[in-house]
Length: 353
Image 1 (cartoon, rainbow, N blue to C red):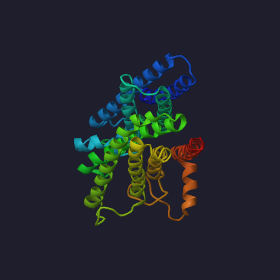
Image 2 (cartoon, rainbow, N blue to C red):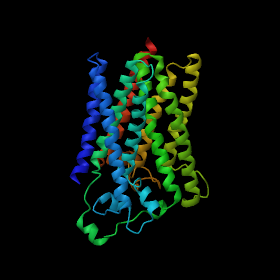
Image 3 (tube, helix red, strand yellow):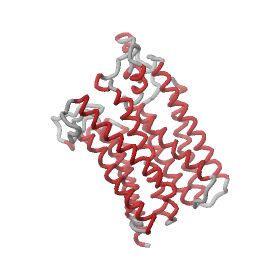
Image 4 (cartoon, rainbow, N blue to C red):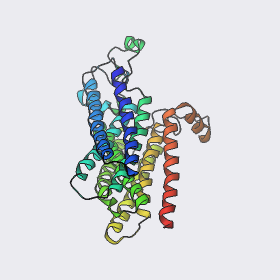
């Protein structure tokens, strides 16, 4: 168990190391720092992929010695639901999200070796990507992915706690992975937009166009599948009920759609040189907001939340209580605040030039 958690900490160290080497590379230091950064990307890709594969393995084999497996699976659960149960809780879904951040960035590092793109654009995008990964892996480390199941839990339910009945549907197999794939790949437009606003180099769209469209397709599919799930499983009597957390996933979709249009106009005619990257950045900030909304257990009453809202408190009191008691939520809030403030500063600088 300690080895598994140790690998998560190693991933965090590598992500921070990638940030440091990216900064050194930006400051004009030796080309070897570029090689080191790419090597870190390679190691992180295989390390996180290995953790994900092993996590699916312990679910499929019903290894109840792991607390997360015990919480969301059981020995008699159908294999297809064991497979999707990995994403039923906070830790597994976050692990999957981190995986789908390193996958597109690994692909971009490989592609960069065979095409012309300004080194500053790549270096800043790499720094931003490693920064996001470091934040999310830190949050992941708070959950202790490989925690041991308490003995009293094993004694009471030796075959596992089982998966929530509402999640035992074929739509569960598709909906969460599709959404988190979208959330993951949208880091690339976010990072590329930062690079453009700081450097003014127009080749940022070589990074952002494909992944922006890819993310839009998956996010659209994820929202659509979620609406179908609500109609067939939750019994809302419709596809959309403006559930608070359901709605929070729609916000980045609106901005992403606007971003794709603005980016297209920028690529063709040079229009929206400030608005296009601003939309790319704020789209991902709203992805973090959607994640915060889901994981801020108790802030809003929602079937998607990982906890129940205490309606005896005002919304502001609930928010302060959650900030005080859930460390991961504090990280998400501070990430959003810092990212938005930094964005406003660099947008102002770019506009003033």
